Length: 487
Ligand SMILES: Cc1cc2nc3c(=O)[nH]c(=O)nc-3n(C[C@H](O)[C@H](O)[C@H](O)COP(=O)(O)O)c2cc1C
View (tube, rainbow, N blue to C red):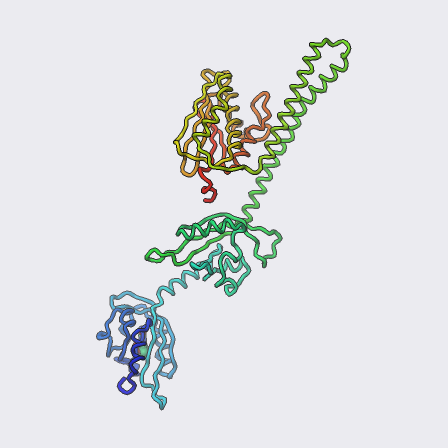
């Protein structure tokens, strides 16, 4: 260093460098090459102080896992006056191993003779770990995409490349919400963004547009995707990882199964309509024939009786038509947040008279004052009325006929139950009751429960029936608030 002592600003720059930097003498055989300068970054990386390393060969960094072939290559390069680049395991002062990546350059005198070597060194253990990890991620059949806090993609695995038909050069650096695989609906994207910026993860099955490159005919695909924030040691979000799986095929299989079911149901619907219309039409026809045949001889009271019967039959047809209309027309529920207690009180007013007339004891248990349910008030009324009228039917003729309507909050949901102490249902009945036109009553249309189920589904809920110790309990489960619309 004596003759070529670095000028002051150069030394200061080297002292401040983040990479570790050393200068050695040129003897390659032991005990050389000896270190004549090491910057603070070298001390930090290795745990050795300057005083401990000056005059020694960098060999003290080596240990059992250091790669002999790399060191031989180093020697070969330096002996031939060439620069060297390599990677091996080195050991810190405390004995812990790390992956050293470094390069060495000769420093020559003006006549070309080598006067010193310098090396720039980096601990790349983390990078290596990441690279190894990414090699594994590349083998996955699910798409994995990593993006930064600015929403720009920093990595996508091979599965994603294949699925999207884009090369890494085409997607790296682009905003994630503009790339293939984003939810089709803006609302979903908004929802995901909100969750992620709150530091939470987001998971959902959604429809997405098929990537333009794909040769398949269908436009829409379904993805099951989850996005999770990645936190640094101090809890800061550093980036986001998306894992997505194409579930289109599964969805298609499900809809085939559904269609099959629907077909089964359709049979019920047609035979139901035939039956429901056939009966009144037949009795209307025979009444008409009878009246026509004996128009001259029939007494007035008898004629009135027949006309009355015909009116009843027509009413039945009308009722059926009305039910069918509800079944079809209730497409778009008007959802709002309802106070459960107030709602049940109004419902009680609605059915109280009917229960008194039928000598049924009605118990309505009001829940917590503040509980809310997210529903269409008319839809929910209709659902409860249907269940209530079934319950009334079930308890008729029983001792102490009782119907209990109760509501309770269950996590993010509200469960409203209608229980009776009637005859109960057979397993076959429990299985079939929700099908249109299936009925256990003599004069029922069999549409009530089918409509009930459809209405609850439209309101984002479910309805089930189960036998209790005495009678049947219908359970209507609905969301407590609109927020629960997305998981
Ligand atoms: C400038 C310079 C820097 C070096 N830095 C390292 C190092 O960081 N880690 C290491 O294992 N060996 C390093 N070496 C290599 C060893 O000092 C030694 O030259 C190497 O092990 C080859 O010698 P050998 O064949 O006698 O083992 C460095 C050598 C030079 C000249």
